[in-house]
Image (tube, rainbow, N blue to C red; front, side, top):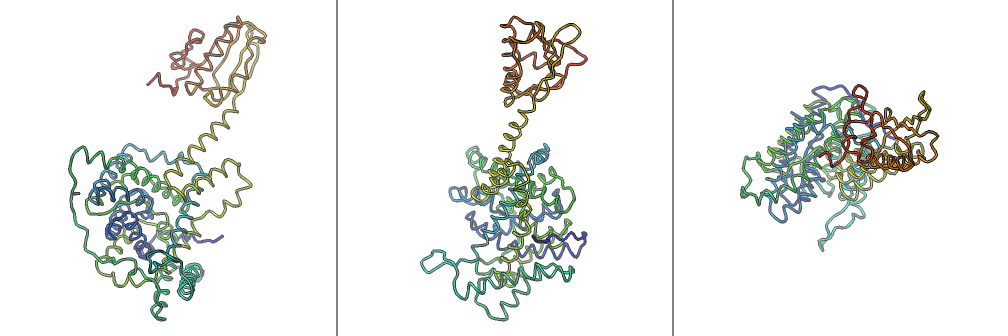
Length: 510
């Protein structure tokens, strides 16, 4: 629908200007997520600075932006409400340690098991979440303390400035790519609002972003088992959500930039960043798909883009808060709307009639779950649904190739995987009473036995042949099959040279 992705070569100018654009967009997001978590705005801003700086410097995906995110903030709010902000800092430190361990043990590779329909659902769901989050910009707090929609002149000015921001972001790259269009849009809209003396909401109306340099401090919590029992569940959840969102965003940027990130290195980068952030009064964070897309669209490709974004944000906090606080919220809302248009996979509408129905259902389900719950639940649900579809489809790929050998025995060559989902089809392939010979050979050369259900099916089949008064031979089974089979154990023919070696998912072997 829109060609928003500018695949510029990596250079210092693009990275620095892109970093400035990202820094401007980070301010309201960090402040908003701090409010969601129930902490001071500076706690969110410090997280955006520290997490963004460290992951950009040592992470596994140049060009990806990290900071305080809503996915983590919604988990933190209960901890802060019950135990206070110091417990949050301790939780963030433990969260970082867990993420470092995930990278050390190379768990980042498991992001590869996320199927394409789940990725599409993830991208579309996050695009909708970003869109819905921007609608708050069109609300104000009334005299009774309740939020209500803008109306009249303020609404039209808001819509006009958002439209102007989007128009500049879209059309400026067609004229020149020497300057990031998003940054140009923010500057122009800010000058228009000041020049016309518009009474509209600005960044300063949300909260003051003035502050000092983050200071090192050890979280003021008791160092005992009770504290660990409080923070450990939150740390595990936050670490999992943070890595899931970061690695999925990494995969998305890989596809956009046609480059390859390093998931395990990113896990370590995220972990180090969160561990350090916890000691400097930050709320922790992970990759931010919205800001990452702004960075990519603005030409940011190298590590310098993320580093400069973090340093610019620190400069805003220390020196330039009055200038940043006059930026209209409408300008940042327009930039985020452009991110929504660039993030949403519009091609997925064309694919609906061309891809298998289960894939379409999975993609839609992940998107909906992402909007109404959170990313981690959506991705896990999508992977489970994909796994069940895979199991159902592969259950049909089991068949026999039968023939009579020179000795007059019937040989049944089993083809396809034998596991819980294919057991019924497996049983229907055999009719012991009506086999033409009394000597039957079941050859597993082209098959694999995967789980306990498969072992039980082989045992049951052997029992059926024994009751029919016929001799059954089992060939090319692994050593573990022989250990697990009961009725059919004595029927296995051992061939040391040809028998395969593979493992079976069965609790008896644990």
